[in-house]
Image (cartoon, rainbow, N blue to C red; front, side, top):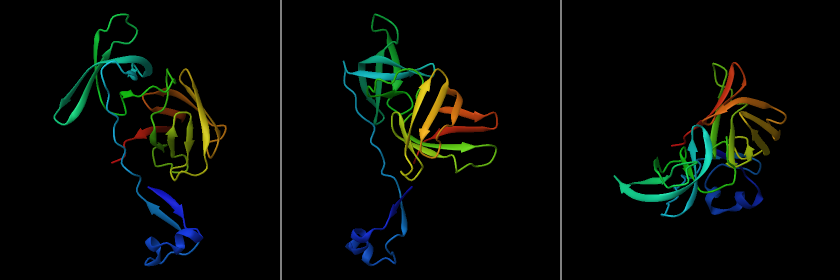
Length: 181
């Protein structure tokens, strides 16, 4: 979900005239569903391999039960040894140039045994984040298993043990990727 603040133009639009919204009100909307990209043989991609993003190339594509299955060259090999990955946001992506450990685009929930919505955030594109509503933006960088935030609501916070879209701000507080339905 994200919030839109009603401005003069929106308040006057037909979409909001029947609803009891005033200028300055915040209205919650669902995020649009993302369509997974389709891949073709010979295409350069990045795949998650032992928790890190590495370069690969698509060697085979098949449609199985309505889902695209992708086989890529095996990471680090000079010959195209088959390596099966599925077309989902956790395993394969179009090239970003951000190899190594990185965060997947999407929503992250944080917890310290209970919910910590004050730390929840959204990655809109690689290296950039915002609060869950698309406001209060900042950037992040990764180095080894460390993630450092700059600007936005997580300014100057550093996470440790970054692996598979999960990291820890301290031993009790972790943040992890949450697939949106």
